[in-house]
Amino acid sequence: MSNYTPGQDQPSQQPYPGQAGQPGPAQPMGQPAYQGQPGQDQSFQQQPYAGQMGQPQVYQPQGYVGSQYPTGGVDPQAPYGRDPQTGLPYSEKSKIVAGLLQLFLGGFGIGRFYLGYTGIGVAQLLTCGGLGFWALIDAIMILTGSVKDSNGLPLRG
Image (tube, rainbow, N blue to C red):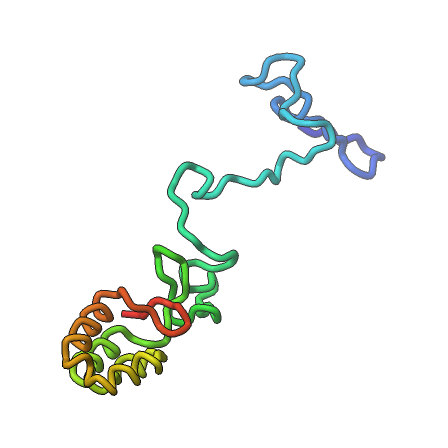
């Protein structure tokens, strides 16, 4: 509701019912239109996000959605994505490649050399992969995801 009187620069503004300080249909007489401290702007209150509403929280660094930026770029700290259980970035090494190298060339320790474990690779080379048993067990462990790379990062699939 506005009343315009000739000779005024701007029309006078009167608040509508239900605005701050004016009683409205759902507001009892004598109470302000908002609840809060005087002088506090109530229009920009932060809404709770999914983790605050009782949903399980998954590790996500600030500004990232999974391994992707919200704008669609790739996270420079995790170019191959992140492990959903631990939140660690995946290694650049593949567990399929490492497992197959260990399975077929495990007598030479090639799978462990590929993962960066030169000490274990040399030991497998000197023992012919533990006469094949060590190489076979190691290949199974690598393919099931039990082995990480030399930096402690999980192998990507």
